[in-house]
Image 1: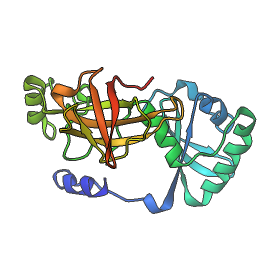
Image 2 (image 1 turned 90 degrees about the vertical axis):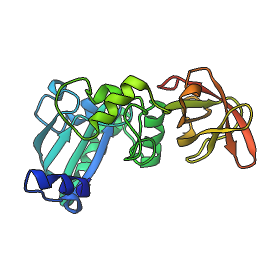
Image 3 (image 1 turned 30 degrees about the vertical axis):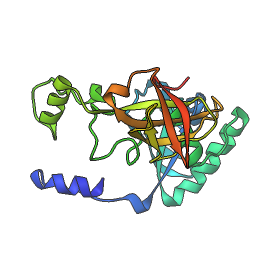
Length: 243
């Protein structure tokens, strides 16, 4: 992100500062996140719209940037604090949240939630070699509107003519876990795509994944196979989010 901003800042000359090493991020996610965080701040959090942020002072912590964002599908906030105040913020959140069921969770646990929701992860399901149209994210680019942005011409053409591959959800019918870069095959054993994210779903108790397949095989209900070691494990293309 830092390299990208600096590269494109050549046109604008904005003053950029990388504060990453001085900041910590704690994600408070789940249906009771608002109720828990409200115990620490005065601002009425229910007035915040998704993808907005505010700055608040929290006693014992200092300034905290509260962002109404998250990638679990359950709602919540991402809290940016200076390193020296982050341990106290963690402590206060657990004190206020434990009676409501709040528990610490690592990134791997959080990743299963975003995958169950069918949320694309940068570096896995989307990167600078993929298109928002291919990833089913055409709704965010507003290509039909006048004005210019990076790669707009490519997106407009893809929306008109279609794409060669599409990001889909796959659910294993047989036992197994689809891992990143595992091949996706058709009934004849031909490679038609690859897994970009995969796990054992805690909610569904079965292997799930996302991956790119040729557009002709992207329809929900299409039977596919996942190459796991020397086996071909039966799976099916399903709509997102996983259910």
